[in-house]
Image 1 (tube, rainbow, N blue to C red):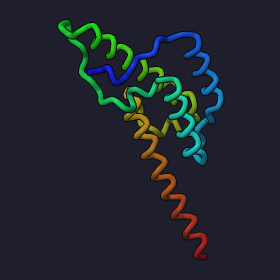
Image 2 (image 1 turned 60 degrees about the horizontal axis):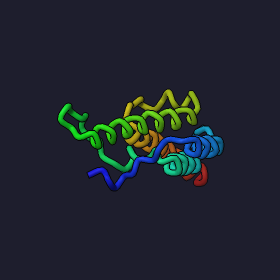
Image 3 (image 1 turned 60 degrees about the vertical axis):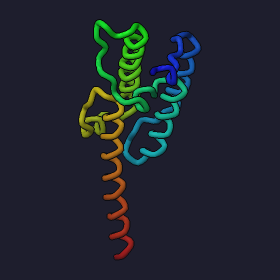
Length: 133
């Protein structure tokens, strides 16, 4: 069931790669959304932290769950927390306050997308109005 999503061992190489990519992410300030999102997704992907973005939420393991299922869920939750921390660390305080907080990285990214789709639409509308004057 979970064999399609290998779980890498956390080691020094992993953290070095994460910090190198992390240093390249811009802080989301409003006008750099597309570039910011590309760099965030690249960093999460290179760090194997994007699992929660691609796998639907699973139920909490029970006492009767297999050790493999329990381990998968623990890593899945850990990757979610780390992904949220990385994303939130690269959003300016003023923008972060306008995004509904969520403990699920997939839902949080969707909320950011929705925020900036409406921002881009409003900007395009304003530019069109100003060009007609």
